[in-house]
Image 1: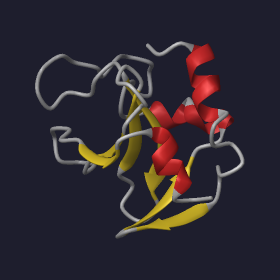
Image 2: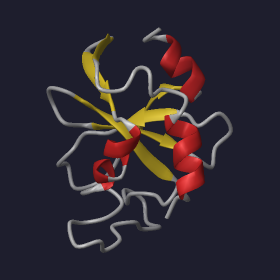
Image 3: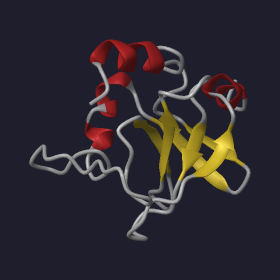
Image 4: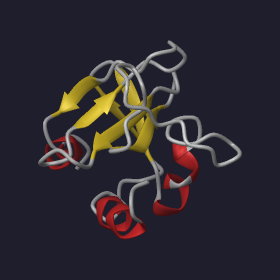
Length: 116
């Protein structure tokens, strides 16, 4: 599980952008507020009873992935990998059975520049 201090540091980078909708290429993105980020992990890293959904196999949700928002229309997660330099930003199609990450930006900083 990702530590609370790390989550606060990450969400602090985009709190002034959270809760709004932003157009990005072919998607409409909404970033979570700090209060929403914990519930935003439901169905990805944990289930509704708090059980882990993280795995080590290909297609499993990874322990280092943190959902920071979603595609407003399709519900696909927008997430970062906190263990990679710069916290690259990804999405993946929700409901496909396996998580196949699609790179949106090489760093969280570069991703956020799109909304400022």
